[in-house]
Amino acid sequence: MNESVARATAAGRLPGDPTARALVHGMIRVDQAGERGAVRIYEGQLAVLGRSATAGIIRHMAAQEQAHRQTFDRLAADRRVRPTLLSPLWHVAGYALGAATALMGEHAAMACTVAVEEVIDAHYGEQLALLGDDEAALRQTIAECRADELAHRDTALAHGASDAPAHALLTEAVKGASRLAIWLSTRL
Image (cartoon, rainbow, N blue to C red; front, top):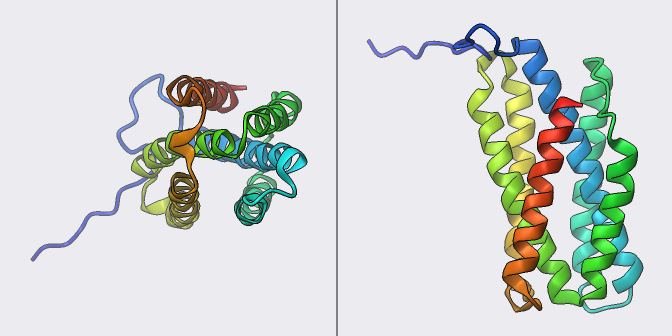
């Protein structure tokens, strides 16, 4: 008989590791911050590219990010998770990143999306690996958001992200900033 054994969040926890509650709160905190930041990136891009050929594509991705943000806002409220202390900074930085990449052109805006979404894909994958069966609903939410993020990446690639000026430099800078924002938001 082959029965699967239920796995709990933080089941392999070692002394000094966060508790399951702390781990989940950190996940919700950083995901809420990330989705808020994504909305702001697209708002910055639309402020510059609002009448461009890619504006409709950006609006569609922004609407999905807004739905993700609302989901994580609700989860944070339901579970009494405080937002990151860095929310005001990410509010400004997200918009600035979106506007700056859009000022570089549509392809740079798309390259920004690819870079952010590749970091988020890895981040969500790490979260999914840590969540146990006791957090099946949260795991499903994160998996659904991850699928949307990968679709955004693919859309941006299809719309010229690789043709951005200084593509390699731009994407590595955005990825580095995204990783730092995740690390800080999980903790603060």
